[in-house]
Picture (spheres, rainbow over the protein chains, first blue to last red):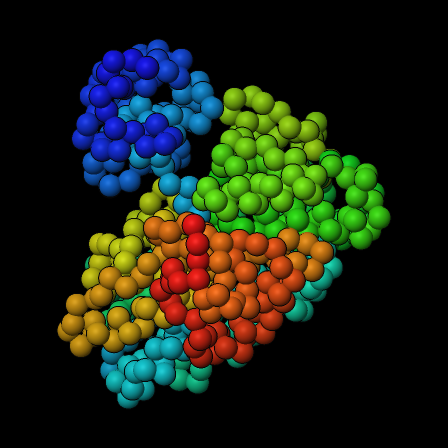
Length: 101
Length: 410
């Protein structure tokens, strides 16, 4: 585990316990773990997700990211393969989006 | 005379109308329900139609019969809601209906048109839904003569109404094909965008294990983008393909179009709603009941029932000038048919996931939580009677609206 991640508290699925602990370095470290190299486009989405969480107090779903950030779903899957909503939430330091059951 | 206008006469709207009618003086309060259809569907019964357990006539009743005398019913589509002007326009005659309090109970509906390919030529031939009466009836005809092959059930996206029904469908399909003597010729595949059989970890584990035991193949984290109805494959956003012979789809669910036309919903036409009081976030004389809101709990009849239980006393406080109490806890209680005359029961709320135990009496039951039993199945079967004769008549069930921890273990 990278030195950055050793210092922060995460839950058993690896999500930050406290979204306020988040730093861009943490995002980089999480992304690296997932094998994702962050580009500007990734950052646009990460920032959207952080702002969304700040405003609404919950993490956006895939559909909400796609409509809200104006990024086609297909591109989201290219940027964050296998479950973009969950991956970007973890990288952005916000809770795992609720499955809404 | 004060006016309460209720949009939607389904499970939530009907219960709310009848309970309010019992509580409020007819000389002071007028209650009006608007619904586009004269028929009240028992939606939990749709699940049983494809397997010939229920017929169409078992799930339909005249809507008027389930609204107490003293409640007006207007059968019309709703054109637009103008909460700033306290009025609603209906399509019939373009009439405006003014209100003092509005209850939005317009529900949620499957939208097959949102997934390319679903409606292109094979709809009700090799592609079916079962959340509509037409889909359920057509699928029953198809299953009766189907000789076997690969049946794929696909959930397009969450949230959906009655989120346990897809699991029940696949469990019942396993039982049905056994009974038909062709289970060895049928491959059952359960394809979901969720990471497992269900969202909540403990229930997901139990239900996932049951899928395995019944030889039902689970494909998690599959986000469908489109269907190729000619090649008979569903295709994900990542271009993975899953072939089928018979596709049972749970299309994207969205709230009513009138919510979008009125500009009061989110991207899926759900009305932003206060989690613990059920008041619309942006309007002080508007409440949202049932599936129409954006609450992080199940869209299900049991939830609507618990909501109405806490909403009615709260509303009576509110009209007397008292504050709304934060009494709704997201409580849901779902019977899951598991086939072969058995069922599972789960009970949960916003904060507590489904746990094993006994319900409703701690230690006694008679229902077992998160565990298969014959009596759970009978609970579900008797529920149709309770729905029409107790719940829809505005009578109370002897079950507390708030979830209880007693009798559960983690």
